[in-house]
Length: 422
Image (cartoon, rainbow, N blue to C red; front, side):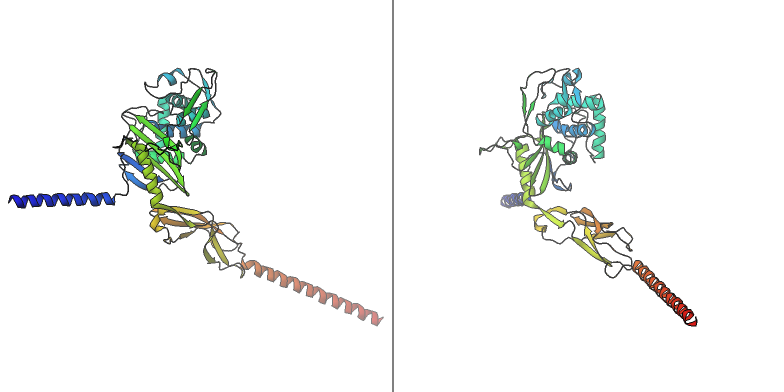
């Protein structure tokens, strides 16, 4: 009996080990962070997810939302004045740019401070400039988040300072990051590795120099395992508080593929490395090895040819062309799969039709995501009625000319007859 039980236990352990081994083999990527997401920046398609709706503290990733609200509500040249509250409301231990009460800076200078060095006092100044107070700015933040489709978030401040009621998720933050990266100025800000603040009315020196907190952007030639530089990285923002742990929203571009990743609650790997950077690089590498950019349709290519019944013989064949390139991020093994178009005609297909007029739309569905573009008339279509009218007019003109000639000949003969009688 003992031997039989022992055999069953051993067999069970072997079975469990095999199951675990198979599970590990099927895992496409190992992520240390408790919550993570990778999306295609262009389509928004989720390429990898791990607890993406888990409520997490975003720390300074909050400043991405702050920056985009400021960019949409201010001119870069506007002057902001540092208030007493903006400086004094920064909690102990949080990063500052050593801004002085009464100091005057432009919106652009302050945006550089929050996105390059994660300065909390700068985010307070900007929030007050836009809304008058941090509390009113938080209302704007939550309104904007809902507009972007966020479902797991509530923001109480512009800096990401810890507050139990200030939270988000990897999913929501990916939406915010994707939206922000559509802004050209934002993209410029988040890829900077260095910023020097010029002297101001309250600070006469140029010695306030700031470097990026995003080590993915910092080029380094050493081969150490803690070299986190990633040559395809294009931004975006780091974050840390003790309750939030280490957070990172990052972007990258390679061979036309643009990705955004978010990792939250990261710590260290068993080797003592920063899990937020290791996870992010693994996410990007997974994306670039597993997906490719497929050109589905080329701008101005003919999608379909239709016959216009009331058109002239020379123009009745109408080519419908697409008005833009369409590309999609697809699994590498699907690169050569033919994707058929769905055509929707919205115009009345009757002559006359002007060249380049919008005839309808074309849709391509790839992995549940639909890509669309307009269909244009590649040539002018003339109405056959115009030709008939032209022929009728031509015949009438010929008849009139003939009648005039006959009438003139008759008159001429009449005159000749009168002359003979004389």
